[in-house]
Amino acid sequence: MPPRRSHKKSRAGCRRCKVRKIKCDEVHPRCGNCSKHGVSCDFEHPNIRDTHTPKPAPSSDAASIPPLTTETSRPNSAASVTASAPSSVTHGDSPTTLSDTTATTTIPGNTPAPIYKTPEPPPLSSTTSKKNRMLELKLLHNFTTVTAKTLSVSSPVLEKIWRVTVPELAFSSASYLADTLLAVSALHLRSSSPHDRELIRASHSYMASACSEYGACLSKGVTESNAEALFLTSALIAFQSTASRIFSRDDVYDRTTGYSLPLSWFHSFQGVKAVVAATWQWLRMSTIVIPIIESQPALNLDLSGHPTFFSDLMVGVEDEISKFESDPATQIETRIAYQHAIAVLDWAHKIPYTGAPLVFLATVSRRFIDLLEARRPRALAILASYFALLKCLGDVWWLKGVARREIMGIVSLFDPDDEEWWPRLQWPLRIALHDDSIIPPQVWGRDWAVQTTNTTQNGGFVSHIELLSDMFSSMPQMNSATPDLEPAHQYIVEQGGMMRDILLPEGLEILPVD
Image (cartoon, rainbow, N blue to C red; front, side):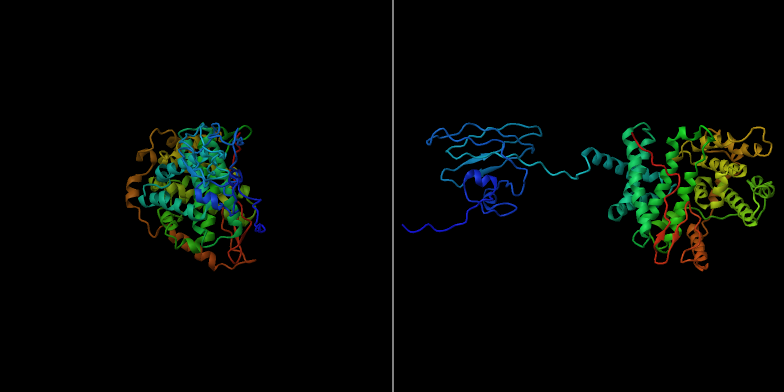
């Protein structure tokens, strides 16, 4: 008898081939036998396992084996397998539902056929549940269909940018912009469901994630590729900071110091100004950012010293400066801060329904914010007049009720017997207590409708930014840094586009959720 030809044994074959007692070619990720019969292979799906241990037939001439049961979790799946044994063997799974069901399979012959558990479909994300995915879809849908319309004042072009272009940019390059978008949308939905814990958690968690990545991106340096995303993120952070105030009614009044000033508004909008200054060399050519900036009316300030509607707020300024300021440079800085803030008020007072009052937050100087933090009466009276201007925009969800709440809070800081300042607070009080957002000229103090009709752009905001940019570039640089940009925090831009001392807007509090 000739010697037996040597052959290689299969010791690491798949489980199906072992049970069927046939040689496995051990090809990964699916062996040849399993591929031939179109069945799952445990090389490809390691979580496949035998649900039952096949029992040997009671006798060699048995024609069948006892019914076997199997469980499966894949809906509506069906498969048939034809074995390569002398007697054809066919088995399959009957259609099932999402719940576990049983199927009985009768197999002729004496070769036991294993029944395998169909593998679970892999999750879309190891960290994102189906509930969270549905929430994100809900937030995105709300942003593109509703919220985007509220981020611009009567501008179809801007509405399309916020509704279509900004989400596209977020999907393509900047996850922090996407998180900020979702945070603002969650806050918007909270305006109609203020006690929804899911929305509260979403607005805080998405904003916390966005701020973390946003800060990390700033610390690496601004470039042409991230300039647009950084600007849009800073703008949405400013909206978020402003809108959060409507859900913080208990925080408006501090138990020890009384009314709490909304300084975070100034810090966040000043942050937008800082990002614009740092990235203007690229933003000036952006088809996304320029329409947003140009949508604002031209900042035509009257600094001539002629009497204006808010001139009385400057009465006695020299006495105040001489009383509180000893340094000549600080005296000049304080005087200019007051003059500039009042000039912005006079400009916005003429065209309130164009969105002009919002510009106040970004255009006032850092010195004026310092005066607010010190609670100087003049600065507080100017702030009360600013909130009176926002009365015209009270129909916008993130400004609803702001004028009345903030003005009454500021007035609470004054003594009604104060003969110097109490009379100057009467106009903001009248506006705050007015029931309608459309204020008649006799109450407003100016025929704003005529002024709005006659308003011309004169180059718009871009021309002002170009002027400031040219002024900065012509100034001598020290220690390889640009001049002070007067933002909420100082952004020091090194040569080569790298940034250091990067901080997020102050006062943007990310509250923990229980």
